[in-house]
Image (tube, rainbow, N blue to C red; front, side):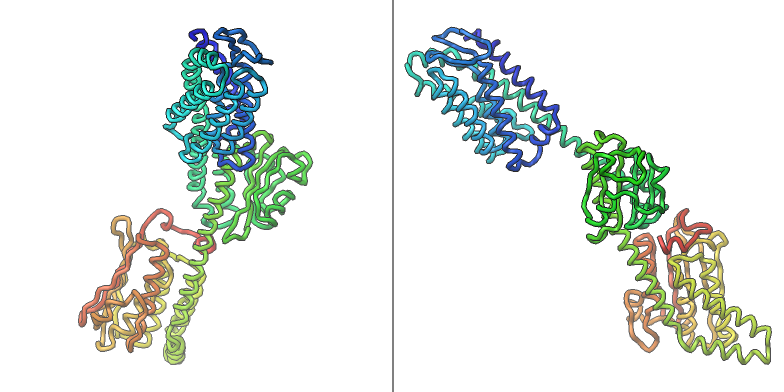
Length: 592
């Protein structure tokens, strides 16, 4: 019995070496880790069936308590038996793959053992098939292949060996030979097979952990790349934004080139092949055209499959992913490789994840674009709310001054021109410099003061450093108009003050008047919705507040304070940062 320990350990070592070699194979790792379909289950049946067949051939031949052969077993006499680790392969297969794998591997191993012969052939065949059935259903019910389940599997393997010994005693004849055999092989086979099961499952668990670790790293990398490209893809598919996004992707993946297209032209190409894959050029590869037409991921592992128009193109493999917005393909992301062997499963999974993330980012960009269009519509609606009498009153005022004060009439015409130019510019832009908004206010005031001289007094105090800060158009002018139209209805004269100053990282815009104030019942809803009343609808205040909230979110504040008989204050606080200081191309903000 003692002599069997090193011999069985040697046989188990052979199987462990085979298992280790298989663990280095990508196909084996995928079969072990992935959810098992019928194809994967058949492969596992074959793998673990072969393990058991190898165990049969490399077993130790025993005759009447004597080891008579420890080489490759080809035939077994009727009085011989075999000590091996056959059940170990069947048990592990059943626990990993469930009933199909357990029963399949059990039948393969059992029938092969039966074909070798010997007085324990029937008993060993039945015990092997039974082990496959039992462990298969245990594996299905309890999933004995996860972390921390190694010892459960070892216990099951040991129990199956005990069962095998019991079946040998029950079926093998003569009984005395069976009894002496069990006494000799039971302890070595139970202990060595249990030890082999531990080693085998550690290899399997390492495969699973490695795959999961790789996927975790892929997920982390994909999320990091998505975070870095978010500011660019949120601007939509434009040449500048796509170039910067492509540079980020190129830097953080193993691809030799990155390209991004819309449906018709290349927007960015970074890396190898930049000499002929030029931005703003037509989509030049048939592979990309197919992806844009079919909206499916496509992989090419040769230059012929890519079908670039330039014959000596260095790119010989590619994965092309559709970029979708609301299920509609709007462009493509392409990862190119010089060598097809570098386009492995890891890169394909990473690319697939990036494609989905970038599509989500483009959907966000589209939603934001629609919001900008909505804001534009609101601005135009606000522009249309200008009292129709204002234009005619201004013309009448200028007309009456033409004969009496032509210079003033000319100045008012200039102010009228500035006023309507500001209206048109405001309708085209999301943000304008504060200086331009003040020009709009001053043009309006000059026309109103010409009609009602000495009716009200306006004070403007704005810090020079804030004049180039970008603000939403039609922010101050409607507030001043409200004050003039409604605040001084019951007073002969009044004062309107406009001030702008810094408060920490905020710019404060304050408009205040000393007019009649707003009734408390109306003040509660003013700015939150439109309110029909004789004094007006409150649309301007509601529109200003809504646009500020949508542009700046919770970083901005809009409050109205009023007291009957004392006046009204409208306080607006907007975030200050380096992006909205200084001269900027606001049209690009609008179109971004």
